[in-house]
Length: 391
Ligand SMILES: [Zn+2]
View 1 (tube, rainbow, N blue to C red):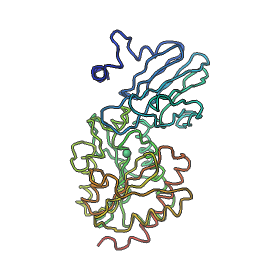
View 2 (cartoon, rainbow, N blue to C red; view 1 turned 180 degrees about the horizontal axis):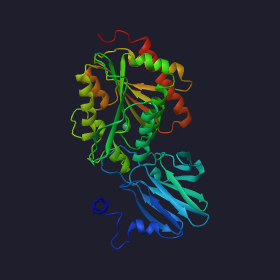
View 3 (cartoon, rainbow, N blue to C red; view 1 turned 180 degrees about the vertical axis):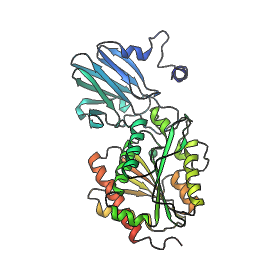
View 4 (cartoon, protein in one colour; view 1 turned 60 degrees about the vertical axis):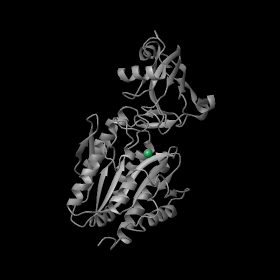
């Protein structure tokens, strides 16, 4: 952290005036204190008054997808109105601030509490706080431990074997598991999540999707006669721990590494795929869960001959019919030439891959419903429409 901070100061010449006190100490002493929540985030806290703070929110590297996120705790010794200015530099405010109102439960701040300033490059939060600790974040905080706890509980609940399929650049475990027994000839469905740390709705949607697989045990049982799911729900733990906007600890966008395979995280997934293919499984579908500014399914690039040919369009059609809200949007021409997971899957295996993108602002209860419908419609298709898709 210290080396990164010094480098940041040298490179930017902005955040670190000579002789200024250590920035964290400055915010950490007093009747009202602020602490940052990500281990190595480039965000720096500056005290501007007894109850006023400024956070300079910066990415781990540039150029980068503009996803300025943050998480911090304010602790007060007596009731206070505290202002926190989020200073994004050249980037713009993106995520509506949220407050934790109970363990694991987050609520968006009322709109009137956030004032957008400087053409969106700053946002000032006005927080009326009671005595005690209060947690705030751009999206629900799902740290490395939270995510590991979720996957451990899920696999225990459903009698699945959780495995460490590899380690990240910084040595954190990458967990994976399979649903179904890998028999020769079975269809293989690869499910990925967590490539981009701030895309929390993608992870929440993935969790809801995985839960929904077990909602109708008899349906799942029929699907598992001929299908196996390989699930790797969080394979950028270093990026999550570090509060990264996009990259892993090697400062690589993992969703541009499906082809180069320079990073241990993508290599781990590919090795799992290779092992299952050696057993005679047939890749059928990739779902890669993300979040962006709208809910959209990025489908395989046009011009590729894929099998099953109509599975994805049938699925999106069924989901659109079942879902009472708008969308999802669909686009086949998103990054067709970049080494993303869906392009790699299509080109390597001749089978469709979909980047499932949830809106950053998707109402969280509605997101649960949407993901459940997504799982149910897909399982139905696996039962009714894909007989004979594979020789
Ligand atoms: Zn993403």
